[in-house]
Length: 296
Image 1 (tube, rainbow, N blue to C red):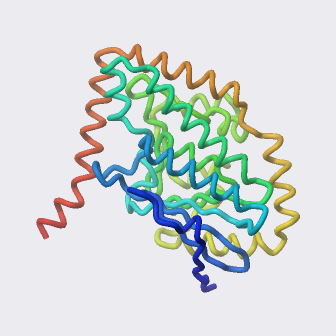
Image 2 (cartoon, rainbow, N blue to C red):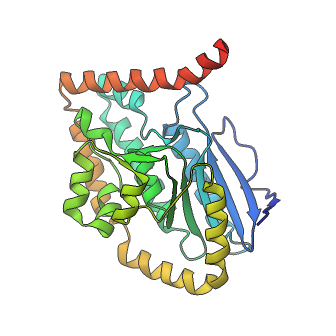
């Protein structure tokens, strides 16, 4: 199942300080592979304000081209071998809290909500989205993975919502994305129990659609596309029906953002120290591979 790599003047155009690379592969149907890179300044694989804005722009590009040459599939993956995503930008959160800048926190969170709603809803009439997880997907990264139509995880991957460790909670679509599949009470437990789940555990819960061997994720995506595209029109119609039944509630999303910002601005000294500790751990882990490479 060899894929033919195609070029497209919009989705493959260079982006200023880009963290997103795109490639169109043809395997019975056109698929756009979207690869997220680490932040060049910090080395972290997280959703900075700049990445959220860039990803949102890419969704706009995909929507603009739907009428002419729609892409049948959009696959999101990470260039980081350890993380699909660490989640939100904790250092940005911490700086906003220290400056008492609730407006900046709200703007960031609303942009995250807008991206999640656009990615999970605006393309469903033509495009099936796929998340390929080959590492850890935490916080907002876990939400992004859940918002796709099909989630494939390599067996070593892990997932969780660590926000409760420093007194916060997922700020966009976690409750809606989880509760449609496992119910609101179980969703609440997942968002507050600090547990890190394996790919197999989430497969058994119905949150991961397919678990494959480590290193075989891209082949699993290609197999899924080959099978799915054999009855593409019918499957798109079923997909559209599912999305109408399980669409995210925008008003509830805005309420969650407001609650999140209010809670963030009231974190205790102990909770802020925990956030500081997690920031240091993330930054230390991000620099470790480079340090090992220099030592070698």
